[in-house]
Length: 262
Image 1 (cartoon, rainbow, N blue to C red):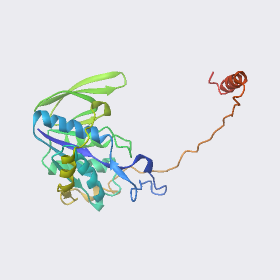
Image 2: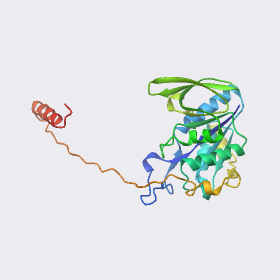
Image 3: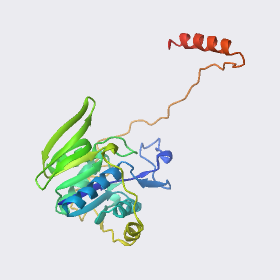
Image 4: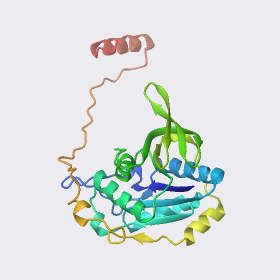
């Protein structure tokens, strides 16, 4: 079983900033981390490898610093890692990113299964995984909360849907996006951490994956951020003196009725 995992390095949640003029996320100088939801994808891929054998290969597209996200995944049990990085890729939207990752996967020979997190915490779109599946022409199962059965030919999974749970069977190769209910990611042991520190992380450029430079980066991204603004918080409340409990309760009830809450 050859399994791929798509991971992303994202700014720490509290450090996400947007350039209001360009609409592009400002990553320079911001503290970064492995996308938290990708950890569940890595864990599930490693668990399947432990049951069925094979290898797990992790891929990440991003600047040179994204190498750390690859190493984090290696420390959890992935066997090999690749960084897809080129200045041509800067500013790529979800469509262009899906093109790049698909080209890299084909360059590496494809996979029986590909795992990805439900979404990235910086973009919150959840579009890249399905976009990769569409471009590769493989089966797609999204919002997976449990892998019920898997062999070398097909996978049975439980999807989290609004009405409850949906059970889906799909032929391999397949791309699966997972939600955090699927497992509990392991804490890397010392051997895993040391091994990831010294692992070689090959870098694949646009030339290496034979990508059309007109189809990536800002040129190849049809999505444009028209405007960026921060919501203004307004507080139109009332301070209630709590020295007299009965009067305080009466005042609170009156206030809630004025706001049509009661």
